[in-house]
Image 1 (cartoon, rainbow, N blue to C red):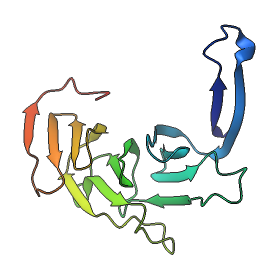
Image 2 (image 1 turned 90 degrees about the horizontal axis):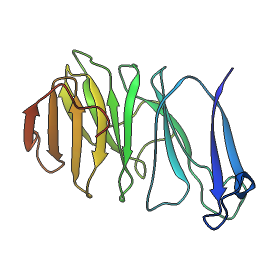
Image 3 (image 1 turned 45 degrees about the vertical axis):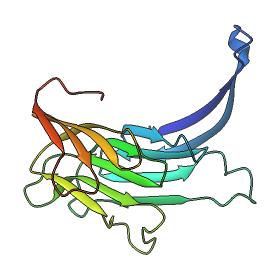
Image 4 (image 1 turned 60 degrees about the vertical axis):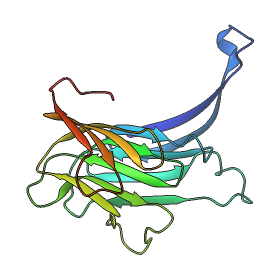
Length: 174
């Protein structure tokens, strides 16, 4: 079986089960490991898969041909499982990956400048070499809170090193 992502509409005034309506479904995903959506670009969803691919698409724009839509599938240079995704208001996507000795496990890239000619991500910022990133969350346009299996880090995108890090193993679901 293949995984799928579905968008539902809920009527907050109605407590019945009939108030939940299925609007859109996107199919043909491998094993989904993580998902995030944009608060600013309505309908924009990023889905991470176990095989290392992230798919970005607008689940609402499928029905409206007048809306400018994005449908992109990309992966890191060193293909590995995607553990976490985050989207900020400027179109940056933070992708947290399993550990690799030669490639950063936190790769941040801009969907506005990503080439659609290749499936390999061109990261704008890279952090955390040889770490396993398990959780991430943008808290503003240039700030990111990231959790690895060993540290909780605050990353300012203007700096090449984390602004703050604290050793901890209790860092899931930031």
